[in-house]
Structures are given as structure tokens and as C-alpha cells.
Image (cartoon, rainbow, N blue to C red; front, side, top):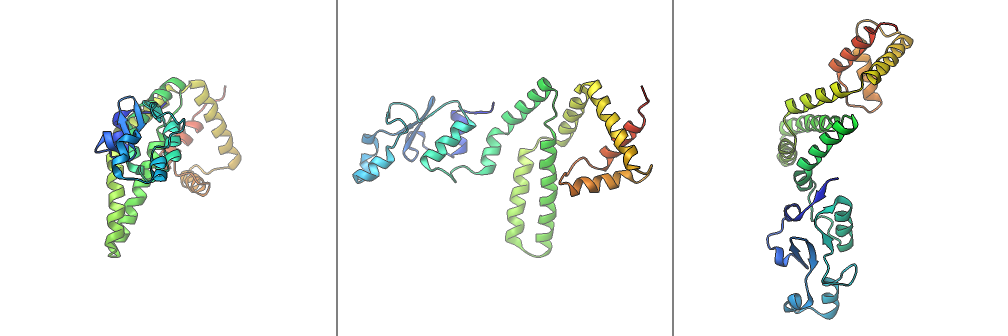
Length: 236
């Protein structure tokens, strides 16, 4: 499970003064609502002071968010205090990317599942953004081009090296149960026969059908390899 600690919180909320961050004090063990005597100097009226010292349990000696916290607990904290918009989407990705990729890799190893297509999907998103950037540049829409370019740069900073992704994906394929893979290939072979796919040109047709169904992967080379492997299966 991905968790958020003190340093992560500081980065997410861009805290410059942990002792006086809005109504909160950010400490090593969690986020606290500041005591009334600490914010009375703002000369607030009673209703304003009451709002700023609001606490889910009413006990200001207890943190409203304990570190480390889960993503669900962070969400509850944000919703309770109305902090939507304080965290940028890319800031969140920057903070959790290493933890998320590490956990995904561990789960893939433990459960024999491949989580790396998610990363491939982000690469596809980047390719799409590159096309938008080029179109905006050609049309002279500088503001749009700049906005898209910033998103591309953010993705570049977030994504691991593509060679590492391919290597990890290959490792996951090798860890797949041979019997499970053989079963899948037999099913593909049977569907290939039922559909009367031609010996040549079948991969393009399959890729187009996948796109119609809303799938961006696999691409032509992968499809071709799978079809050839399935067709090479010998009867039991």
C-alpha cells in the first residue's frame, strides 16, 4: 500500500512554514490544527476562529492526519477541510511515482501479474500529447502549445526509461505460468481458425478491431508474434 509521510506531505502541499501552514501545524507524527492562542493574533471574530480550529474529534491535542497515512486517509483529510485544489495532479504523481512503481513491481512478482501496461498507456498518452503539441505549434497557438509542452515535460520527468519498462515486461512474461500461457495460445489458435484469418495481413485487422473496442495495445509487432506462436502450437 502506498503511504504518505511527513516529507511527502510537505512536497504535496508545498509547505514553506510547517509551524504555520494555514490553520495547521505540520509535525513529524502528523498534521495538527493550531491551538486558538496561536492564531488569535489574526484578530478573528469568534465564528472565524471557530472555523479555523475545527477538528473531526474536537481534541486539538490529537493530529487530524497521522503519518504515515494511506491515500484514503489523505483524501478524507482533504475533503473534511475543503482543501481541493491544494494538490496538483502532477505533484501527486511526482511524490508517489517511486512508491507506486516499486509496489507494482513487487505485486507483479508476488502475484504473477503484469502491471507494466499501465506505464505503456502513459507512453501512449505522451505520444498523443506530442501530436497535439506539433499541431498547436503549426497553427501558431503558442499558449496551447506551451501548456501541452509542460504536460509532456512532466510525463518525461515521471516515466521510467522505456528500456527498463520493456525489460521488466519481458521478465514478467517469463514469470508467467507455462501452462497458463499454453492454454491462452490454444484458445487464440482456435479463434484464429474460427475467424478464418488470412496467413498474411491478419495483424492489421486485429489491431484495428482492438482500437474499435477501445484498446490501445497490443500493437502490430506483438500481435504478429502471438499469432505466430499460437499457429506454431502442436496438438497434444
